[in-house]
Amino acid sequence: MFWIPIDRSIDVPLIRQVYQHIREQILDGELRAGDKLPSTRELASDLDVSRNVILEAYDQLLAEGFIETRKGSGTFIASGTYLAGHKKVHVPLSVYRCQDGNKHNDVINFRSGIPELDLFPRRTWTKLSHSIWTETSSSAFGYDLPEGRQELRDVLSRYLLKTRGVYCHPEQLVITSGATQALTLVARLLLSTGDEVIMEDPITNDIQTIFASQGASLYPIPVDGDGMKTSLLPENKKPKFVFATPSHQFPLGGTLPIQRRIELINYARETGCYIIEDDYDSEFRYEGPPVSSLQGLESEHVIYIGSFSKILSPALRMGYVILPPQLIESCRRLKWFTDLHTPSPNQLILARFIGEGYLERHTSRMKKLYRNRRDVLIRCLKAVFPEQVKILGESTGLHLVVEFHERSFSKEELERMLHFGVRVYPVEDHAIEKGKHRNRLILGYGHLKPEEIEEGIARLHRAVAGRL
Image 1 (cartoon, one colour):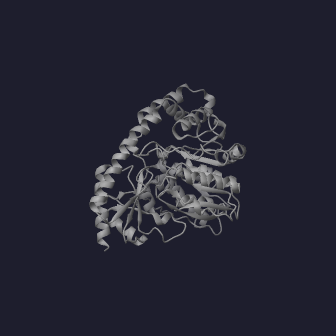
Image 2 (cartoon, helix red, strand yellow):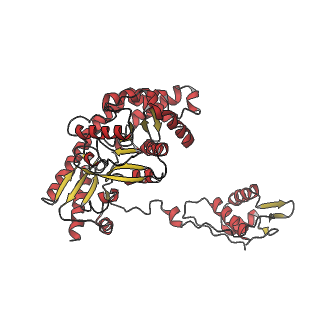
Image 3 (cartoon, rainbow, N blue to C red):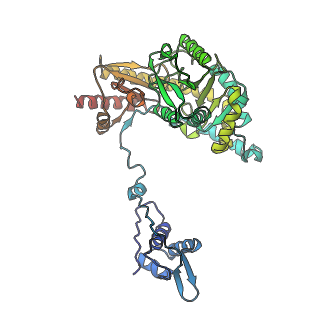
């Protein structure tokens, strides 16, 4: 009997299982040229599967040249199909049985940067999407410009001037697939091996990786409650750029005051470097209106990056970069060779969403929601950890930082918190110079309901007490 192991519990079609098993045996030489395969009826009966399963598996093997049919004789292994040294690829069955098998059930996850996805404006987005797909000229669905649709760049330049004090011509905008692509384009545009980059410390670990992967060395500048300590900018360096999040520093949450902004701009002018302004999470400011951009003070030296992941949804993968004129063409070429362009229909929908005022109304609505959740989190922290914690960076965004007095959290201790049903994130993971933030935790709250926040802090208290 010709035996093939069939597993009906995994998420792999039976046709694929039959095809893959025979293919591997042929490549390994277990089935040799000239060997005869059982008939489709016989094999289907042996494996207790539909004959169509075997027919389609054989058809695939035939199309790829692994087998051949001989009229009146049957199906045989073709010659020249043995691959010396072939190594089978073994995929753990758990990958097929449970794609989320590495996730902990019933864990309250205080991950930062996640908006309330249940309140994504689906109806409005669906209405605009239907309009775009049914009314827009078919030319919009072909290959497009790397810098993005004119409609989106026009409306976005007006929106950013109104809400963020950004001064730019639509031609200075390049639409990207999220802020990550914008940062990657800037890194490829400006950096070579051996270049130096000045960065806030701590700062998002992923951003450090993007710049370091281009061969740059990172020069850290410490951060306090007012953002980057610009008085520590080195006089003896010639960096390619200074990276900053002046409106809402990640992760500590400070806002760069005008004095430090001016000091940073003067430094860029004197050294001839650029400033990369990542306008992280700044729309949701709870203490007064959003702070104006750094770019609005110095457009020649500032490269401004933003996205819609926190305002709307990370799944949209919509971001942008605003460039000084001398970098526009080079960035467009890089964008073209990266992915040609960001999907045009999504750009057109977003342009309509912004232009018709939906984005501003959605932001206003979500700001009220997030302020309430922030207040719940602060109230719970003060009630559960009286006199034990200091709260940082609570004025803006979707997260805050909790500083514990005379406490230090190791990675092992943070992992053990999962057994208490809570996941939190250390500031230390984002530090360039290690060892200075071991008592600080990042708590994201945008995606958590008030009752989840309350329960999550209760679990955090049990976890912290459990290790004492």
